[in-house]
Each structure stands twice: as structure tokens, then as C-alpha cells.
Amino acid sequence: MRARELLRSRALRLALLYAALFGVSITALLGFIYLIAGNYVKSHVDEFVSSELEMLSADYEIDGIDGVTGLVNSRDASDRNNHWLYLYIDKHGRRIAGDNDPWPSATPGPDGFLTLPTRAGAGQIRAREAHFPDGSQILVGLNDYEVGEMRSALARSMGFGLGAMLLLAIGGGLLVTMATLRQIESINRVAHDIMAGDLRQRVPVGGSNDEFDALGRNINAMLDRIGVLMEAIRGVTDNIAHDLRLPLARLRARLEASLGGGGNRDDLERAIGHSIEEVDSILHTFGALLRIANVESGRLRESFSDVDLSAIALDAEQLFEPIASADGKTLEISVEQQVHIDGSRDLLFQALANLVDNALKYTPEGGRILIELSTHHDVVQLAVADNGPGVAPEEREKVFQRLYRVDPSRSTAGNGLGLSLVRAVALLHDGTCGIEDNYPGARVVLRLPLRR
Image (cartoon, rainbow, N blue to C red):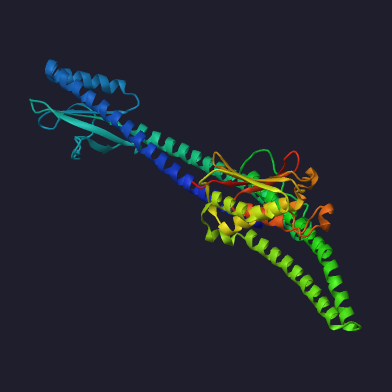
């Protein structure tokens, strides 16, 4: 199985492709070096031949035929390995000194050199000829077998080196592939365990801080978020069962009593009226739940536009100030002007209205509620503060859960969805929402990105 997985692995295919590209690149580089090195040695052979011919020509200028003959004989005698070719003939083509072979019939190339075969068949002779005023001619050549030897040695070295590099590249690719497969396999195991129902599993994260560690951290954060959402769903289910069981039970009892008769028309109408109120309360709760779900879906971002939060804060103050005065409470406002963000005006107004309504609900008579709007660098801070009983630190996150209400508030009107909607609106606008102490009371703060 491991071998089949390895062969199907994309990482192995990429490693082999890299090895092939690497091999082609190295082959091209070594081939270039091979040509350069061969031509370099060949050029040195040609330089030696040209220098030797110039020396013989200079000797002719000084000592004539005898000087050239003596020098050729001397050179020929000292060339024990027969690397050099010397042939000196007179104007009639008769040999004067040097090699016994006849004058070659080859024609010089564009560079003035002749390429001649050797008796032993190893390499070639690079030769040049010169003509003297008396009609005599001399041919000087050097065996370039060293060029061939160098090229052969270089080719062998390159072949061994290329083979070793390819083996290292393939071996390294296999090691990298196996390491990658191990990391992917660990992620797959976690995914299988989670699909089997074990949501406690997490992807192992090492200390290398590479791409797999970043992926593992992101997956673990996603799983943590899913766990929180699952807990929230369970909490919502429990709260729905708790909050809706009582009104449904009352509604059933009232309907049964009305069905049993025994009352006059006025009693029946009152029972029906109370039943309708219970049904409206239940529908309102489900409507609020659907609205929060719609906000959390993110689809409403498509309708975002430029929103003036200063105007929203002023509208909220004008709406709730008469209600606060009627209850013997003070509603104040402190806002910066022309504070703009990208968002939904209706949702932002609904969120602020929920905060002010909560503050009015829990602030005692004679209390004070303050709406604040300010900017700090690129963050907008919208807050509603009161001097009511406040929220205990251990309850400050729970109150944002759907249908959650602290125990003392169970007797207060409401469905426990107001702050859930506020946080959903904040998240929709890439912001945050939290509760702080107001000493005394609570201060609910929305932090939203400022429009750029």
C-alpha cells in the first residue's frame, strides 16, 4: 500500500519532474563545459605548432637551410614519444630532414591548419606549413591525442557526476515525498477520526513553522470553531426547549380549558387572545433566530454601502430619549461627527437599538445611559454604558449566546436574542463586541473598521 501510495503521489511526480529538469540543465551545462574545455586545449595545441613554425622560420632567416635542417634533426631526436611531426623538403619535393612520410596532399583549412591522421590511429595531427624563398617547404605538426584524452576523461567524469546527481535528486525527492506523505497521512487520520464522530482529535503541529504547521494550526482553529458552534447549537436547543416549553404548555392548557367549555363568550375570547399572544411570542422568537442566521450567513455583505454611524447614534438617541424620560432615566450621547464605515444601516441601527433597549430595561429609575461614538486610529468604537447591576465576568460571553439569559432576568420580558444579534452584526462588519465594567453597571462596546 505504501508503495502504491508513493507511486500515485503528486509530490513524487513533482520530485521526478524536478530531477528530470535538473538533469537536463546539468547535462546542458556539462556539455557546454566539455566544448569549452576541448576548444581551449585545441587552441593551445595550435599555439604550440604556430610558435614552433615561427621559430624554424626565424632560424632560416639566420642560418638558411642548414640552420633549419639542424634544428629539425635536433627536435626530431628529442621527441621520444613521437608527439611532433617535422618534414622539411626542397623545391623538388625531396626530403631534407624530418619524417620519412611523403608530403601530405591535404588542403589547409580556413585557419591555415591541416588535420592529418597518425600512424598509431590515436588522435589527430594539427599541422601547419611554411614556404621559404629558395622553394623549400617545412611542415610542423603536433598530435592532439591529449585533447581526445581530456575529452574522454571529462566525458567520463561528467557521466559519473551526472548519474550521482540524478541519484541524489531522485533519492532526495523520495525522502521529501515520504515526509510529505507522512504529514498528509496524519491529517487524513485526524479527518477520518472526526468523520467517525471524535471531534476531540487535532492535527499534530511540530515546531518547524513550515506550511504544514500553518495548515495544521488553521485546521485545528477550524475544528475549535466547529466545536464552539456545536456547543452553541446544543445550548440553543436546550434554551429553546426551556424557553418555549412553558409558553407552549400554557397555550395547550388554555386551549384545552376553552375546548372543555364551561365559560361564557368573554372568557373564550380572552383565552383566544392570550393564546394568540403566546403564538406571537413564539413566532417572534423564531423570527429573531432566523434573522441572526441570515446575518451570520454573510450574504448581506453584498448590500453594504457607506454608512454614517454619527447619524445612526443621533437617531437612536431621539428614538429612546422620550422612553427614558418617561421611566425617570437619563439618556445622554457623546459622538464624533462624520464617522463613516462600510456596512448595513438597518442592521447597525438594530444592533444599537438592542443595546439601548437592554440598558433601559436593566437600569434602575434615576439611572443614566450613555451612547458613545469615537474613533481610534482605524477603528470605530460604538458603546452603550449604563449604571445598572452590570454583568458578572463569568457571564459576559454567555449572554451573547442565543436564548441565554442570566437567571435573574428570566422574569424580565425578552427572549435572550438581542445581544446575539448584536454580536452577529459586529462579526458581519468584521468587528468585535464585548462587555466591560462601567463602575457601576455595564458597558457594551462594538469595535468596527473605519471606512478608508
